[in-house]
Amino acid sequence: MGLNNAVATGVDLLGDVHGGAGEQCVELLEEVVRDGDAAAVVARRRARDRYLPGFGHRFHTRDPRRDPLLRLVTAATAEGVVAGTHLRAALEVEELIAPVPMNIDGATAVVYAELGFPPPLARGLFVLSRSVGILAHAWEEAGQGRRNKGPIPPSILPTWL
Image 1: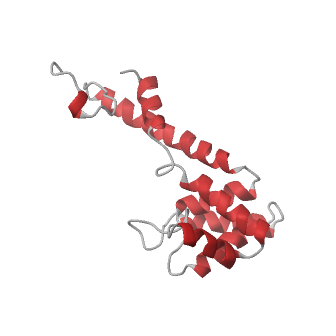
Image 2: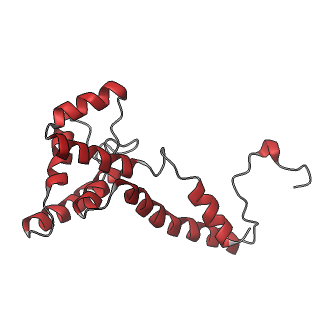
């Protein structure tokens, strides 16, 4: 399989579960900003689903990538580069659902929202950044002399493979 096919396959595997949280979190933050009542937004969303996109992490009690990004947004807000409305919304949601902290998807959602990107572009930017890693992985696999294979379930592989 060529590198372009490997990247295309990897990108095609991204979706709502892996790759969609940034977009969903920008939507959440925009709803908080528009509504003006983070508690009401959180209550409405939690009535539908306990999960809030952009918050919590499977492996980290506090995502180590969160703080450096939020410090940059805080500095940009202080310098008047961005308004800080989405940052404040995210921090308010985080406070409401404590002890569950914001994760990398939430922090990048704050960055994208503060820069004025609409929610679908948050997903697009995630896909762009992830495609670089997919390319590197495919290149590494190709360098090991093995055939790059797409995610084909073993049950449908031809017997001659």
